[in-house]
Length: 569
Image (cartoon, rainbow, N blue to C red; front, side, top):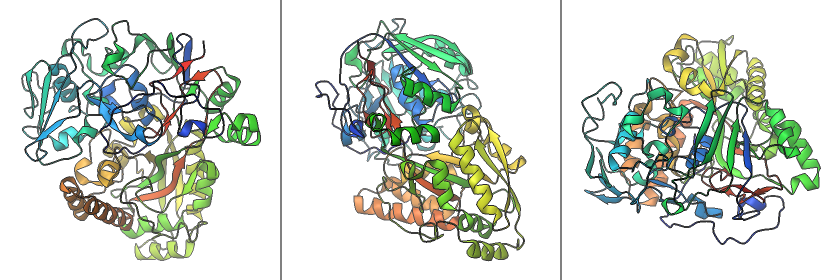
């Protein structure tokens, strides 16, 4: 999921001409370290798991949204400028940000002229429409946000996508000519430029679409294209000879090759990173405990690292449909019993993040500090209050529950184990259930029927705002309309009419004060419903090798900007 907020600024800028900064701790958080236009070399990324999909229309992992910009060009994207300018949404495939009409219910975009795929075929507005349409079929493409199905008018509520409907189409999307695309919404929505920044709007030629297998070689409109892909092992990108830098100034074509190694042991990744054997840890969530200790105790290594606030939040979903957690008091018992100190330690201590007490992180417009479950005042857990809630939910002796987590992510293993221990102190007996990260959301935690039949009552998760208000942060997490049969992000299955109505109000709010007020109400109600156990407001300890150029923490993605990296010649 996206790991940093974005602002409503419409300015467009690039990193060209940026003055190189001296290396030092956090030097890349507001500046570009080793700015360079040098070409050549192989950028090597390692990942302890794999992407949810390399199909740009079928991904929601933040690191992958960041990485897809190397080969997929959506209508809009995020500025590659350092600092807060990196929060700005800017044109990519489109000539400008969308032109709104009909009270923000109609949005029109014009495509840049001359853009082609890697094979020289021209990109058309019909390709963008098709790219959006194919995301309606969650049986083929289960990942990624579902904003289009929620926001579009016409037949969006019943349309099954082009894989199942060979004759129909999404009637709310018009393509009056080959370079114009018009979206008709079912309600006013002022933030639509953020929706089309998802790579779901990166064009796909229908004749070349192979459905679930398209991920093996998605046709590129970016600076790189796929050379090979060994599933679960490695994929390799090489420069796209048809790409023109004018098409998207936010990305660069510097390296001669980009290699991504998958399912590499997380500690081995850190060792390879510190030794200079790889360029980047693709997951972008920071080094593990052993490497963190090495970096923080070695001034030279620390000066080559950054510890940005990511905008990301680490938490546990508490499912409302798995008994006995279908009783709010049982869910409250979990939130009171959790030991926030051990959860913070498992996630990396103060360098991993600050203890969280709310459903909305401080980076989101509308955040307010409160502490319903004594996370801040009693960070070791409030067992007394937990046992009172167990009495209220008819489970005075506690209950059994399963905790789902991603078994190939050491911090998640440690966090789930820490939670298991703290719940036991209140009489709640947890069994740990590990799953691979690459299919965690698409096959297990994000599939409600699987969650129910396997009694996954508590599920680890992480999230960052799709844009910086409670809608961009929380609609997919907390609105009942967001619950999906697969790739579901509302894993708690929160479906409170009060919360749903507040999101409806937020969609149409036009003033900052109204948006802040509604966001605060959403935050408070979600915490009262006890559907989320907040753990930490995340920070990441990132390491940059001395040979890496154009290193900058993009404030939207909350990690290094993968679209502009290069190597010293």
